[in-house]
Image 1 (spheres, one colour):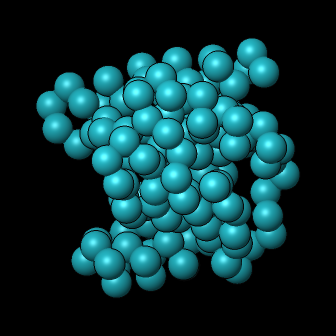
Image 2 (tube, rainbow, N blue to C red; image 1 turned 90 degrees about the vertical axis):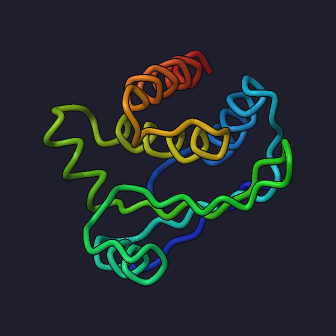
Length: 139
């Protein structure tokens, strides 16, 4: 089950039914199935609090993924800062909705085992994001 929650922000204008189907489709591409995934949309102050409290990181970020996977069953809490998504979209000169969808699937790709911190991993993540985003535009 995929759930959507907010803390300190309004729910973004996303098609939740479409997002659920898309996430399940992308998960299936990696031989996974959706378990319990919760998207928590927050502001910058909340993402900073979560980053400090749980990861001991003192900076803003667009997404923090907590992985509770059980084998091939994807489960996790995905905190997304809508403030940072908006700032990143402006900096990248892309539509806010496009950047939000990229971040939404980025967390799922982390749950599927794709990393983006080591040498060459960022390019692998970006390619996976682009493949997933192309699937969304087909729906």
